[in-house]
Image (tube, rainbow, N blue to C red; front, top):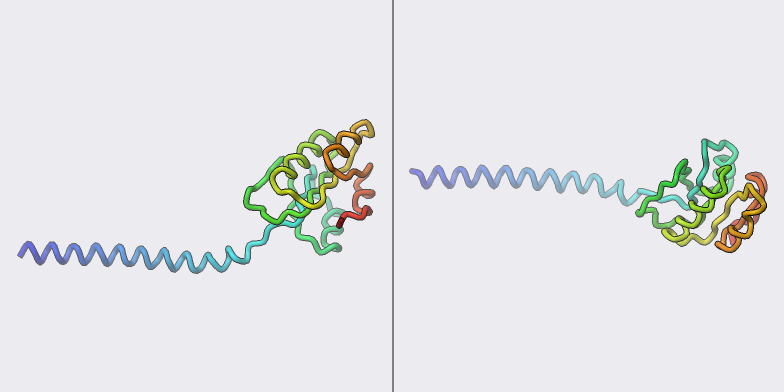
Length: 143
């Protein structure tokens, strides 16, 4: 009699484990579709606040962008082709660009250089510069 009880308990246990595994597989299949569609930013933009002019420029150029309001980087952003820094602080802009260059190896790195004395530092670092945001958006940046 105790043999039948043991077999019954084992079958109940296997049923519970099977149900758990099946629900996990189902959840994984549902999530896989959304993971495949997840898009990464082409352009990573460092700015201090929301920038309507920047958003319209990015939309006009048909670029997918992530606006960052701090030195925030994610390892899973694989296809970052361009870094743009437009804050009012040159040291923040330079830090953002240099860290981003190390992490993502983008084709284009551009920044606003607020103080003319810092231009050499930006240029030595391989960062294209502009004196103003408006000038930055007018530059030929796709090279």
